[in-house]
Length: 124
Image 1 (cartoon, rainbow, N blue to C red):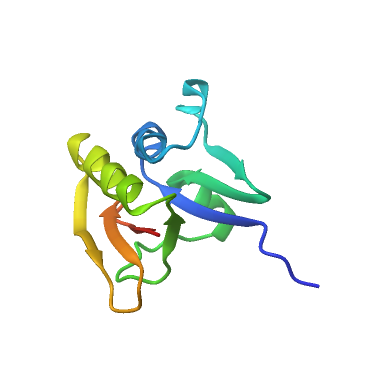
Image 2 (cartoon, rainbow, N blue to C red):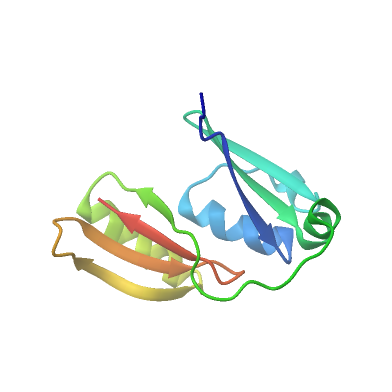
């Protein structure tokens, strides 16, 4: 049996990355800002952050990725909460990739960019 247990994100600066995910609503202690590996759990799935130096050690090599390869998509409670979260992210100085819109497949959608260039989808 195969079960998704963890999604890992390689980050250049741990505090910078964690601050972004705190704005999204993850509760991450400030004491983790200097760690080389951080995990948060949400309903049985772990989101992990690895400092670039740790990723190099784990994988034996590191090449800067290019292009959009995988999507992290976070379900919001309502259209209003999605719009408010998007605004909060932008107000904190992060980059919006696509403002909230009503997609043709019926969902409300928005995309923001985390500090390491990953596109993060918000939807309801």
